[in-house]
Amino acid sequence: MASIRFEVVEVKIPEQCNAVFGVSHFIKSVEDIYEAVVNTVPGARFGLAFMEASGECLVRHEGTDPELRKAAAETMLRIGCGHTFLLFIKGFYPINIMQRLKDVPEVCTILAATANPLQIIVAETEQGRGVVGVVDGYKPKGIEGEENIRHRKEFLRKIGYKL
Image 1: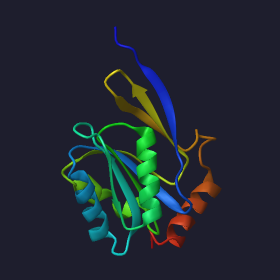
Image 2: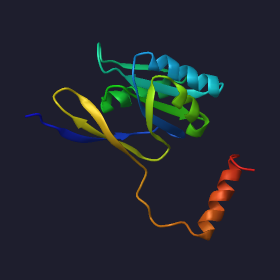
Image 3: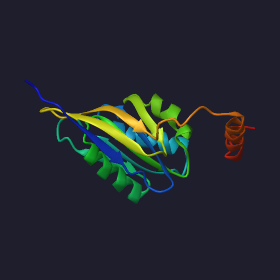
Image 4: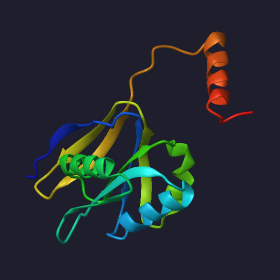
């Protein structure tokens, strides 16, 4: 009978960064995701890592920022789930690249795009490891009121996402 073990992997998002975590397939993912980011946000600072699920089963990595590239690769090694990728981005938001990432032929799904504390729930069998889900941030503390609505709208205008 097959056994299964669960683990929660904490993703330490570097200071002033956001993380994008998803599922992809094929070794070409690294170069195509890299191109999607640099073609969407010129001068983007980021690190990218992709976990192969066959062959050499290596963590493949690219990026424009050596520290973020190293952090993404080391984090993916700890996560250890084949055909997943992790981007650490700095100086722009995930919303700036989400549609382009979704348009990359190898990208199957995006599970998280966040600056919040992030945990990856991993299942491990004799064959390998897989993502069960993610925990993005904290549980709700309530429902927004009028003051919260006003603050949300002001914040979006302050950072330039609304008129």
